[in-house]
Image 1 (cartoon, rainbow, N blue to C red):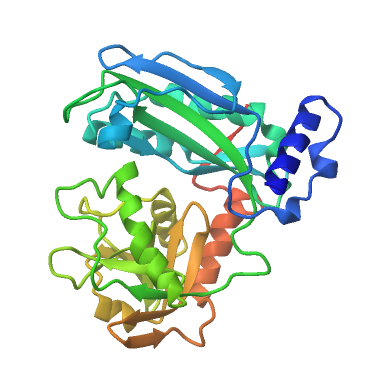
Image 2 (image 1 turned 120 degrees about the vertical axis):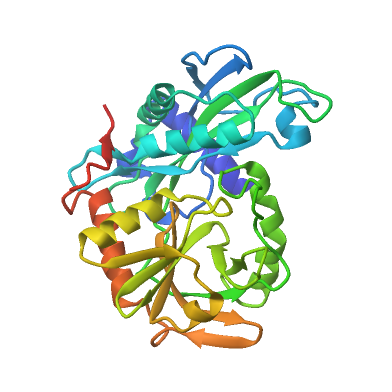
Length: 358
């Protein structure tokens, strides 16, 4: 409570212009957690009407009917993306158009009106610009951007909501790895699955994430960082790592589970595939059995939060595979350095992925 009070007081000082974020805030104290900022973006639309640009408003609670579609039937999506203050001093986004398109695909799957890409990207730009003093200095972290689309209108009976809310809030987060990359230990889940064919596993539906909390907590209680989910049909092929995509490396060839509708088409995943091929690596998208992955030379998972997390070991049904000496593999480190170099503008953006804040 005392920490929350101090943060609230500090934010009021910022609003009054009595402190400078760049000079006074302890950026090294940031972790990957919520630090509320001053401003968010919000717009609403009825199901049969087009989306119109929204407005900035103070960050805070929003009123919602107890019968809202998102509360009763889980009709909601979210995205996760970052804004970076690069080595050049400017603020950039990483492939925000891809987040907009993924949210559109998810909206179609959950029977919600898709937000136009132009409104999505403009909203992201507006809310980051309004909170840009919260974007950490280069190398100290990033601003995490969280767009939400949800059925906010009241509905009784399993049916699409009559109206929808699209909002974005932001928070500064510290670097995922402080003091260097650390390889993580993972446990293959024997009793839980993330998604099944024909379900919503291929979109960022909010309902996909709560069921993973129990197996994740149980794995962490045993000393593992996270769980690996196998496919729900054969229970043999790797699908995802918690909320991250999976890669392994065998004889300098990268392997990753193919997109069949049961795993999320990660933007970081797609970026790694393109980057690896550009650097001369073969990348195979297909079925990746647990047995094959545990015989690989190295492995890693990827997502917005960590970009790339090296995997030090995988345990399956009592058998444990340790990759190398438990340290990040050479290919993993190369790709991490290359991708974060593009995001921080210390490497050339040959793909045109960076979107500068206007």
